[in-house]
Image (cartoon, rainbow over all chains, first blue to last red; front, top):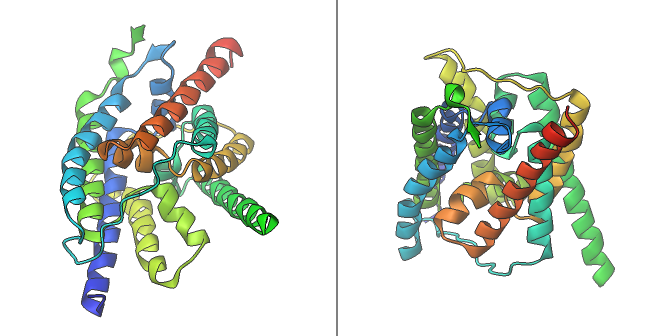
Amino acid sequence: MKNNTSNTAALTFSLLSGLIFGIGLILAGMANPAKVLAFLDIAGLWDPSLGLVMGGAIGIGLIAFAIAKKRSLSYLGFSIQLPTNRVIDKRLVLGSLGFGIGWGLVGICPAPAFVLLGTGSIKGIIFVVAMVIGMGIYELLENCTKSGNK
Amino acid sequence: MLIDWNNFTPWTALAGGALIGVASALFILFNGRIAGITGILGGLLRPKFRDIGWRLAFIIGLTAAPFVWLQFAPLPDIQIESSNTLLAITGLIVGIGTRYGSGCTSGHGVCGISRLSPRSIVATLAFMATGVITVYIVRHLAGV
């Protein structure tokens, strides 16, 4: 199954998915941190637009994932990998709470960060580099915890 | 609650959202993967040789979006008012938080809710809540 043709197809669809995702973010206004903050500012002059972004995305997503759940292989023949973890634990909740604080401070989350990087903005570059370092710190902490448990 | 009707953009928001949905649909139905940026990027820091290509391809596509957009139209308004120092600090927080929380707005907020995953619904409520509270503190209590 994993021949060169399917690998090229996988790369093409990855690139295309990323591109369409990014175009969607720009069109939706999600790539504009000021608009994201205006959505989170429910006590101020509230811009509800981004609620509709979630609505539009989830509307399509519900159909796609309903199909995906019934299949084991993708249309390109790859196994469909849906998350299996069902545990709602401290890591999930505290991590997400922390992410929200960062998001609320500047109005940038990971996907739009790459779109900002692509505009050549210095601020976008700074954010992405710091975010990757943050993910690296997570890996280090995880490795320390794992070796500490042995 | 006061709605900012002048900046409310329902049609582009819905259309942009639908494109994000289409991208996530293509990714799960053709590549068999969840279009979650945290997971796609995080996986590159724990590289498995077979996975590097598609992860990079997705990120390159995402990063190339403004360039492709510019071939057809000028980019819409993008305002980042935060200082570079604040961006560096929040970048770190977002990197660490999303990895501990196993996802962000794309993986939990779009794909996870579309899968009706209880974990993703909890995560999305959590980051939405602190996002709103943080903006409230900064804008209305600290008065910046």
